[in-house]
Each structure stands twice: as structure tokens, then as C-alpha cells.
Length: 456
Image 1 (cartoon, rainbow, N blue to C red):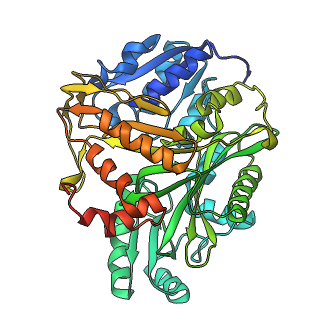
Image 2 (tube, one colour; image 1 turned 180 degrees about the horizontal axis):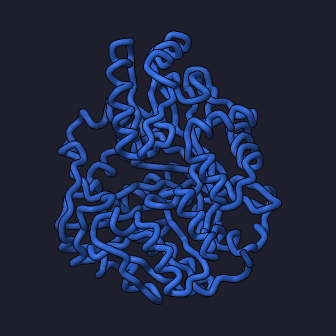
């Protein structure tokens, strides 16, 4: 495939990430083509793109997951490349392969690398071979319940079952004893089969009291660099709620070790594009363990952009068109602290139940050190068919304390009415004494904060 500057890029996604890609392309002088489902015909990305094309009905399976329809749209609109954003087909090796077969550049790594890292069991084995530490457990998928029991007896309870083809918390089950393992095994296999058409599972030691740390990397054919780490520890049901960089929990030595491991893994894989290597850090031992690699842009990428000044979406596009990375590790400078709160159309007081509907009024936040990435507007109808993310508030400060203060002010400034949102929950979270002190782990929200009333 001939590389060179792109003239037209088709965006195979929706919502705030589609709008983010449109803006990056516009700054690069690239025309954009926005695909959309019937449910998104009036969306902001559709309005702001240079061109647009409907690819199917409201259900994701009929539109944003319809590979043939998207590739056909790229050919009809004479796109040079496709940007998949995150979610949907962003980590689908077959989709990347189909794009290549039609001489349309997939903005991301090669299908082979996507396939390798997309299978969590294979990625775990690959990381171990690259000298990157992984949690104790099975290197390959377990063949059956009997093998799962054998591994659990060897590494000790609690254990976690994970779908080999999984992601987003699906196909994951924790077992604290043998009876739970037998029940969890059947459920995890069924869920993995339904979500990924692949019921293979692997098993690993379930570590409690851990931080979730991810490292942002950029790579072209010659160079691999890291852009620091993000702390994504604050989660519920394995879904991230708030991210920050740098992590308040890492020492200088541990930061150096974990970023070096991420670079080593990416280099070993021949990775080219933006990507994220995810780890857990055991608070008890201070050791880190590889979880997975995400072969796409992350929802939380603005946190890294705020502290480095590097536009990750532009870099993705430039790498895809053959432009050299143009920076070495020594060129990357880190400044201040950044925090991101995800704003979803969910009711936190009712176990985060999705709350689609019409946005009646919207006053975005702003001011010094604040960035708001969102696709909503007054009169916009939040559809029930997709993820409930409305946008992200990102706060930057010279210190963590200043970033927290700015985030508090930003959340208080913002108004969204018509649907329930997670804004009240985010306010509660950042004002919690443990958050301010940096004392939390991945169980903090579910074991602690969620049990307190949001009305306090």
C-alpha cells in the first residue's frame, strides 16, 4: 500500500471520539467523512464533518459493527484511510485486514499485532516471553474446568477467570473458593461466548489492593517512546471512572521500570501507532504485572496530551501515512498534573443505570486549565443503543492539588439537564479525603464510596 499524506479520512465511530478525530484532521488539512447510523443522523460529528454517509440502522450490529458497510462507504467516498477511534471495530484484526485488502489504510497497528494483543491469553504469553512480568496463572487458555481447578490449587485463591478474547469487564469472574470457581467457570464461558464468539478462558491470581496503571506509547517503524503513565485505579465493575497522570502512587524507580517494560513489549511486538500497555501494581509487594495492551486510542488520552503537549490523534494519523515520529524519548517533557472525569448518562444513585433521553439544557465547563471533550448540545437525544458516555472533563494544574481544585470548579460550572448524569458522583469522588490523599485501590469505589449517600 502506497503511503503519503491523506486527503480524505473516513471516521468509523461516533460521539465525542468522532468529533475529536474531525478536529485533528481539520488541523492537518485532511477532509473527513463521518459514517452514522439512523439513530445518529442529527449528531454533532455528522453536522461538522466535511462529508457523511449512513451505514445502517440504530443497532450497532447493523451500523458501527458492520465491517462490510463501513469499508464500502470508504470506497464510495474515496477515502484514503479509516480511523476506528475506540470501541466498536477499533481492535478488530479482520476489519483492519479488510481495509488493507481494499487499499484503504487502517489508522492503527497491523492486523497481525491487533490479533496478537487482542487475545488476552496470547498477549499474556507474549509479554512473559518478552521479559515483562505477568500475574501468576495459566500461560495458555485452560482446556476445561479440571485444568482450571488444578491451576487454582497451584496459585491459591482468590483467582480470576478472564475471557481470552475479552475486554470491557465481560467474561470475567472472581472465585474465592472451589465451589465458586466451578460456578464462575460456566458463567464466564457463557458470557465470553455471547460477547466474543469465543469461550476460551485463562486463569490468574486475583490480587486485591492493587493500582491500575497504564503506559501510553507511540511508535513508528524505527522508534518507540512512552508518554508517561496514567493511573486508572478508580473503577466500578472493571469500568474506569476517573484517570490521572502522573500516578500519585508510583515512586521514581517504579515509574522507570514500568515505562521501560511497556516500551520493551511494544518494540518486541513491532508495534506502530499509538497504544497503551496496562499493568496492575500490587500495593503489598510493590511489584507490577502486565494485564493487556490496547491497540488503539484510549478514552483517557487527553490526560496524557495535557501533560505532554503532544496530540495523540494527530500522531496516529501521521504514523499511518508514513511520517516519522519525529521525537525521541529525551524530547518528551512532562508538565504538571492532569485529571479526567468521565461524564455518562447514568444514574449513580441507582447503580449507574443508563439514562438515555433528550438533553434539555447544556452549559459546558471551561476556564483556565480545563478541557471539555463532548458531542452533546441542547436538544440532542442520547440514544439507548450505545455506550452512555456524554463527554470528558479534563483539568490540568501545576500540581495535583491545583488540578483537583480546578476539576471541582469545572464540575460545579457545568450544567446538563434532561438526563441523569454522573456529575454529582464525580464531585463526591474528587472531594473524598482518600482521593485527595492518593490512598485508593481498584476496590475503593465499590467497597467504600458507593456505600455512602451521594446526597451527603
